[in-house]
Image 1 (cartoon, helix red, strand yellow):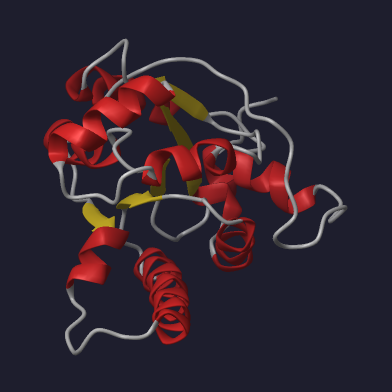
Image 2: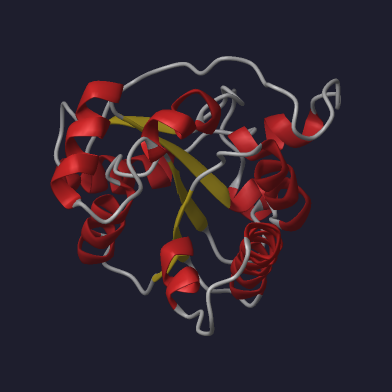
Length: 209
């Protein structure tokens, strides 16, 4: 891959997209990034969008439809903020293929830095029990899905580095990021699989929690 000249960059804002299972450390990295980047960034978290919701409990079919509307709205809010020129740190997860495909259709792929946030399943389960605010087994259900697309610009192992180390590593990567980006590669490859089908296995590197 080759570095793209600065003149080829989009006028839109940069999206640092943290993708990992529940309890993998995305939010901790996002908070650390805001402290080390030295520029104005917005942290956009899908959990914050869910927290905006009010109203009565919904039956399962209505809840599922409402959650999908929330995720789709979140993607479009991210796209709109970036299109207006805002730089973003996004905390989300591709636990279903349609979410990735929706983001691929909405974001400027040259302006997305896709960061994989990894952690072993035993450690995820330990963190899940310790925090006590997630359904039991949530991370296990997401584990094989979240990284199935297999392409990243940078990856983190949150058992081997803390949030500050990860944030610094991401910051150091930004001025030397390579093209085509992970989003550009995925946008360009043939649509050989329908939405919802399993996708190729992930690769690994390391970084923080």
